[in-house]
Length: 453
Image (cartoon, rainbow, N blue to C red; front, side, top):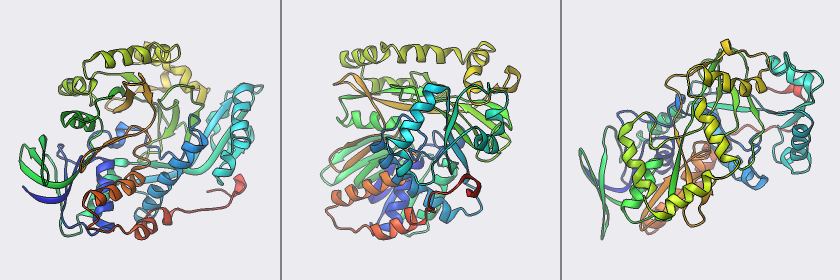
């Protein structure tokens, strides 16, 4: 179908952000993006299939300060882009966001995090607020709660709620305004073969020749990497997330404290990006032997990335034998059961909204995607966060959370590698990139709660 300097495989938020960065801020001549679905961002980047959260690291209590610093810059890049191109809030909303501590022990942990660990200093808009201020922002969080229970929240107005699917489409629209940029949807990659000049990519609609290739296809990235001989010491633990829905319970996002050793997001409640009257609670986390939610044909793809070897089986056994992780996994299986699932999940909702009843929540149908957790089969353990495999003139991106939040920062890094692959024949306008992204992020000094947005 053509010859290109760069071919990107995958049209989710990761691939779309790289296409945007390459087309708008480099002089690379010919660029193509190939997506197997008929629409851009139809799978995990679709707004019903993820938490809609832009992770800054401020209220994610499983992040170290170093991890938060890393994520913060990436989130500010995407927030700046959205502030710049979406003033009418069609792709995102900006609401209050907080992490809630209930009881003396949790309050002590959160206070220590804010004051001693340096999170209050790293995030100037983050405030430690008590029961009265929490009530002003989120009345139902306090309503019906035992008044003798200690209560503290770290709160910020930077609660960006994002439709990552529409954001990906915005990236694509910006990119295709430039000559030399092509996007092919409904085009499935069937084989990739390395040649002396790069790669030949066979699809069900023809072939592409690429000097350099970036595979940004989520879990399928590792599948393709393994077919080309890369990533032999990596496997995946696919986790399907689901949500419960309620009517008009929260104004913004309310997180609970993260359980230690768990790579999955803590249960939280938030108002939907497109309909603030819908409150979502979740995610649940269920292990599934498939790379895409509800698609039986991807079971075989899972076994491709699993490896079916002794190291993979031992890694899974070691991970699932953990005394914290195993009960968590088993408990999440119960949440899928009719009626019993709702009753079992209700205490998680009540930690956020104490007055919630079984009649208030319903399991969300058609919500939730699959997030790959990275398994290191050498150490037989989970590797938290994103994974990137660098090959010979090819990159493979496997992006569990917070990959969507840091998509532009990943693109920033990847485009520099791509230019190296292309023998430094092209230039990257880093100044222009920063001006269009993180340069648009609104900054304010710390202020009182009454003056916040």
